[in-house]
Length: 269
Image (cartoon, rainbow, N blue to C red; front, side, top):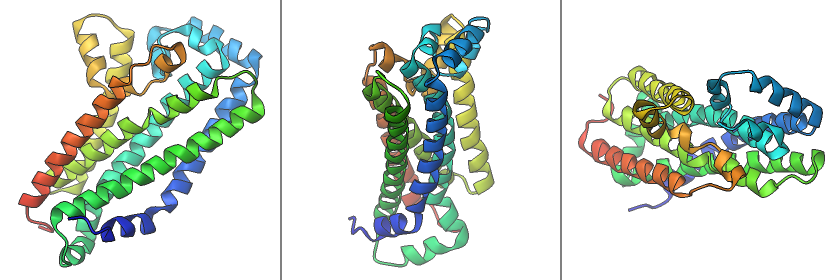
């Protein structure tokens, strides 16, 4: 049963990550909004992308060139694709912090000697970093939307907000996959390598699957979690929330597996 001790400890010791990551991504958002506020620059980049292969568009989170001809389309396509990569890195680090780093330092031995079950420990650590990730998203979105209000006009800020928050389910998935790998594997370095391979592989699958055609390409795109974090559908008005819900359900299943593995293995060996 949860008693909040580990959850409070997690937030107290790691809340500054909200500032570091949130402000850092907010500055990135401000820079991209600043570029998007100049219509000449936006059109110049659109003309440049017009001569490039489809894979280049996919790398920026869009399959339609027209996305780069509007202010909100430019902001969403460029910022969301880059922010998703950075937040995937946060997801890996957060997933390691849930179990692997505490186990390596010996802190987990002390915590588990207290009257708290392994299930409650893992749940509170996971919830703690999930809340920190949400805080990062909200701060990042606030700074970016403030930049939009200051630098642009007639821009659909609600679509930008939804597009930014749509990154969160993918971040949650990466954190959970890393936590599961760190729980199953004995070597932290191997867990890091496999988690990084999951992120990089998913990104490559998204680009290749989105720029090619055929059964294999479609399968690659469906497997990639990056394919579900693009804001293109939100800007075009074709967004289906089922995609975000799918990532959350998969993350919850992965976390349930993490609990099962964590309860049955020896800690610290």
